[in-house]
Amino acid sequence: DIQMTQSPSSLSASVGETVTITCRASRDIGDYLAWFQQRPGKAPKSLISGSSSLRDGVPSRFAGSGYGTDFTLTITSVQPEDFATYYCQQYNAYPITFGQGTRLDI
Amino acid sequence: EVQVMESGGGLVKPGGSLRLSCVTSGLTMSDYWMHWVRQAPGKGPEFVSHITSYGSTSSYADSVNGRFIISRDDAKNTLYLQMNNLAADDSGVYYCQPYGEVVWGQGTTVTVSS
Image 1 (cartoon, each protein chain N blue to C red):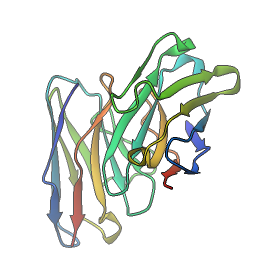
Image 2 (image 1 turned 180 degrees about the vertical axis):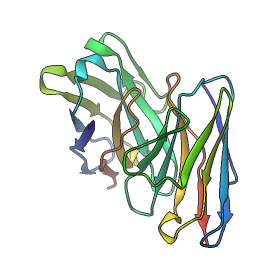
Image 3 (image 1 turned 90 degrees about the horizontal axis):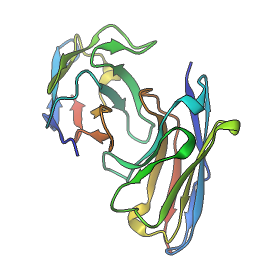
């Protein structure tokens, strides 16, 4: 199985700051990497697929990058509604695997 | 726009069974491999099972192998997960996804409790 190592596990930020979350795959996954956001008690919301393609309706302050084994999610000028938990997901091969999550709070 | 809608969850006693359904839209489901993932309360998502196009091959997480059965009805654009001999550890929200389409439905909640 492909292991996804996500860091940090938690992150504190203020509104307007820029934050970066990283995800490392245990082997090359190309660009088969997605990021999603999850608020407490809610279903996940897809943000980015294909490592860097922003999903429809997702604000441009979210950006993804990376290829192979190392990936990042950057949120530029964090807004109050961005405080949530973020996960990476590889879909290069089954079983689909996920990072452990990064909780972003104030 | 690709969408999925899961249903069939509920409260069941340990050892009981449930059948989950996932209806897809916005895609030709027969062209896609499909999978289920689940998320236990307070945990991250985890893979449960996948099925290839036409149902020729499937795989399961070790934790559900031998108890869960994945199937599909492409004519109905519907994916299923038959869950047998349920245990408390199977509780959580279950989501389906088409492979390569990183979309999320609202999920369906399974609670296994006596």
